[in-house]
Image (cartoon, rainbow, N blue to C red; front, side, top):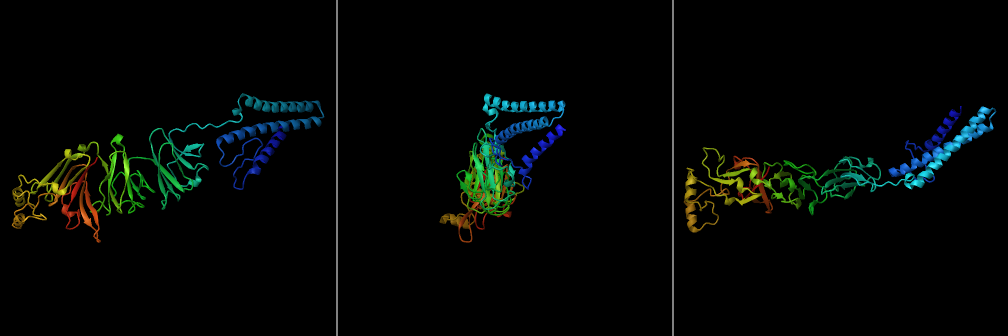
Length: 462
């Protein structure tokens, strides 16, 4: 009977303590207790430890007092010696229990106050990316589609590392990583934090080599505003929201592993079409950022073989005729050997003077006899003009005069560049790029009508 009474009283105490503090949403709240820290949504682990330690001491002391009271009532109502003896034993046991609780607290506090009021010391976090409140840490998922579901107070992303490892962070105003104007990207070095309060969602990655498109142009070596993920392959059509909206290009290299990237942006969709474009954008060291001023819809993205260019291949051969490498085609040739292509090769198209040795054709005869007199001389002297009028001139001195075909013997990006004008007469750069053999250049719009190739870029890749 005594055990039943004791159990009922304990259950009543438990329900009185907790049930009254349940919200309608069944969210447990912790009642304030004298001498113990208040527990709220942002309380840390140390607060819970101190609270529950104190609560257990109070509970044990309370139960000892209740047991003493029950023994006293039993003693007063006792009608036989056995009940008197049980009542006295209960009261003595209660006093002993209460004394032990108080003594344990006093002894622990005397030995070391931290044993009853522990102080949480943050150990330095290991290398990694963490969500932090400023004093507590937890690992950060690489993408969070709804920031409101995260633990309260964890409003910063920390990059903790012991080297030069950077992370890139994208903050979205909307949930589900959905882009909207005003979203931003950040580059975070070791020991730095990014505040994510107010964001709807976010994602982060370790910074890796590649080409990054910048919607807001460049700010130093970093994109301003919103930035793409790293691009490591060419794009026939650039994805939204960057399509037509790129204002800068950021390139990240890793010289330790000969990991270099570059790009050529094109206004036309599809890399098989010529049109307005940029010069090759690349950096020789760790990388950098460069502003661009064309609405880009496609991009050549190449892995630049900067350190070992001769391993890219055996070079190129330029021909004056289409299908120039076929045995039955009588074509002038110009050889660009693999050893000639260093980090980056650029030459004016009129500098690629064809060799007509052992070629039997009318063109070959004229070019061998008049190798310095072009039939396309813009301002010939009177004497040269008369020779040109008689046809005593070379119709194909260089690749600029007769761009017929290109044999690509290795891994190269070949860019044919020329000048062009829009409908308002404004000049711009025009190009067509190739990575494979070009059998018939006449099938491509490598230059505007009545324009000629001005120079050629050759970039070794791997």
